[in-house]
Length: 249
Image 1 (cartoon, rainbow, N blue to C red):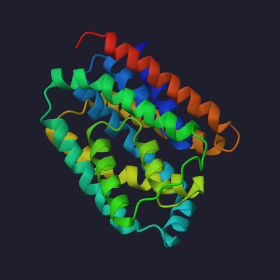
Image 2 (spheres, helix red, strand yellow):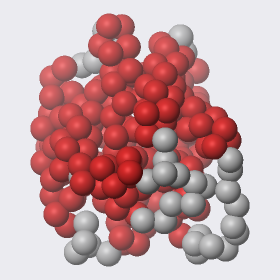
Image 3 (cartoon, rainbow, N blue to C red):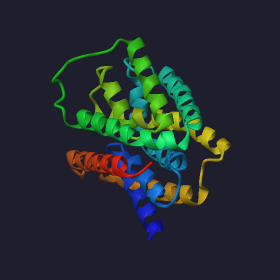
Image 4 (tube, one colour):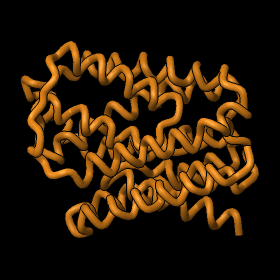
């Protein structure tokens, strides 16, 4: 039964990541339900979702090429920042005690859910505000550290940051988001594997399910109403926030 739960969570996570982001909201608690400690569950979730991000990134390579050609986007610098930030976040997770991380988790999920909801449902253009290039690089650094440390909702955080460049093409932005997510996760993944935090039997289940869900999500992206998917992610985030606040550390 728990195997089915993790596999279903992984498929849905891959689907959601391809369409909107926030899939780790599902795999993280599913792995905890499978008996993994919180830090191990977070590490295994990150490693398990990474192959799906690479696969969907390849499938979205045309959008990435368009992003690279956009003069407002400095892809090499953003990529370097994402790689370094992911490494820092992964190392921070390693030095965080399990009990402390358990207490932080509901706040992290609440924060990610709030950012996701704001980025998904606030009307575009309600407030015109743009950062300069230095500000954008700094913002991406903070997002990358958060992504390496926890990762929940990091996709929507990056989309929000990219809008501050003045970007509005969601396909272009999503393609760039996938690349940056892969890079920040690569650093964290290597760190988690070396530290021995990965439970491979469950990680492989997550990887296979997420790849299948990612490809399904890419094909369904233009057919499933975007707001419906985003509403589902927010609802899951709120339920998990309540659950982890109530659950004993």
